[in-house]
Length: 272
Image (cartoon, one colour):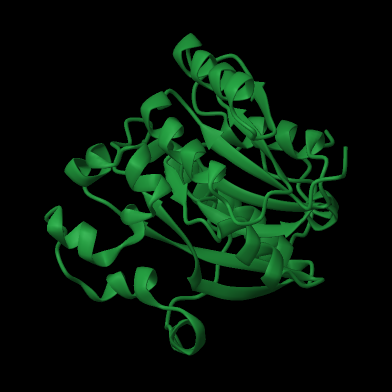
């Protein structure tokens, strides 16, 4: 079997309905040579059954990495997944983000040495998230502004993320005031660069855990490329029951330390 050009690492926790829509999105990618590593932070058997069904009936190359549910430990399962990745290039995303059909291809087209590609996402309200069926993913209607407006989406400037190609997307990427960051929903980087900073900091819970590894990559000399109008996924609606103030302030303190000391490596990462 040929080595995959990219490993797509999808983090998930107990959202099988959304994960199914996401995997449909990977079934219609224009670039076929990639593998999927599902980094599962302790989902129940319902998620496992869904993934097993895809492994049995789909052409997707899927590896399911699971750990026991012991609170929010996304950084830990992501580090496990990084260790298992067979490709030299990693794309990080979430189990509630449906990729547009050129998602993998565009990440690979934009890749450069010593660079991180920071992609974009378009948030959908709950009723539209639920209305997306396999047909909408295969036809790519869920990325079509007209279809979304027909479903009751409010018209905002953010729709440009879905309607920009070529010169327009270049222009918006170049002149957007939004800084390119390491956003776990849509970002890609060389595996070697992630290993050099020792992966994610496993002390971190929900809130900014992806930004922190991004800050260490920046401290290590990597350049962040803004591609939020070129590499697109739609983000399905969900509540955030695991959001808590104690974890957020702990994470803030770790990030503050990373910035202050210009740290490039965490002692709490892949190698401990």
